[in-house]
Image (tube, each protein chain N blue to C red):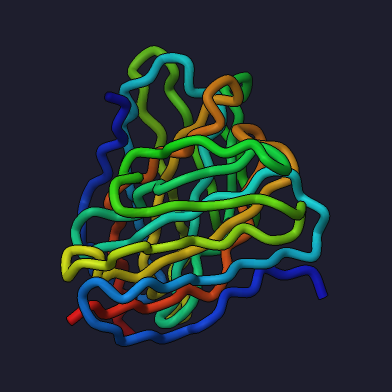
Length: 112
Length: 113
């Protein structure tokens, strides 16, 4: 079946450094790729998303890149801050199936 | 305030005792979904609903039931809970499935003894 692989599972960076999280998807029909941030005791919240007709999208310190040929997409966080510490999930979806497939999550720790 | 609410937030029960976790959204979204979150496995889709009276299985539907009698509500039913259903459960809704973000509820932590 369809799956999304996410790496790394944990990531520690110094405050101010950049963090990169990578995901690979298997379903070539996937056309929507959101990234979620989950803080302790809360539900996941969207931080950025990208659609298959776009290769890159940026929102202040956060950017996402998509390589459809290789079927992978990445989250880039620059100038990390302690409040960026959380669990991040990638996901892939296709409007035709109504299903969202999530990665297994990355626990990001930003060290002050 | 636009939101997805779930109740209860925490529940401890025993094997075999039927339970229902409620989910409600006030954003008039047609699409709603249930997930379970387990360590190392991420979020796995249990059931989803495209509209009132229209539901379908996700990746891990065994042991769960859902209903969608009203647009705003999407309860998750465990007819005979077992310990392997101990998990953190999230309800979500979206206006445009597969092409727009999902809005998640705060989660329900379920323990089945």
